[in-house]
Image (cartoon, rainbow, N blue to C red; front, side, top):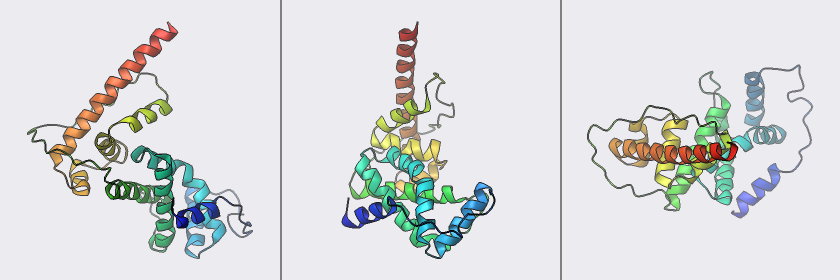
Length: 216
């Protein structure tokens, strides 16, 4: 982690004197509280920035870890993302379909992809001309596994599979959007997704079978 990131991380892990004028009113909806935080952050309020960080850091760190498996690198992605968020929050406008967490999440995903490119971790996808291939729209089998196990399995996917699975299944990007972001063909995106699903299903089936045997 760079000196800048260490300072940023240290600052946001330290207690900040509470601003008595921030969010001390009656309990408000999550949307209203986010709007209050946003307005305070736009004014450069340090307590509001730390509160926003504390509120979303853990969830967004997990998002980062789905793309960047090394925890130190994922932490750097998180710090980079928050730094850019605070720098650009003055341009943020709250909308019902684009709330604060969704905005922060997009920043983290963009930072993760940039990190993979910068470190040459984003795979050089092999062109695969698979005419007529269709994305598998069936959900992964419900093996009764907890979310943490599935999350761990997603992180174990090869980088290319993992990246496209995350972008398509979890973030909701289309194959056209993924192709544009990663400079690959739509068919390659579809192929990588299909292989990611197949590998996950293989792992899940194996894990479910073993779990059943242990409890029988």
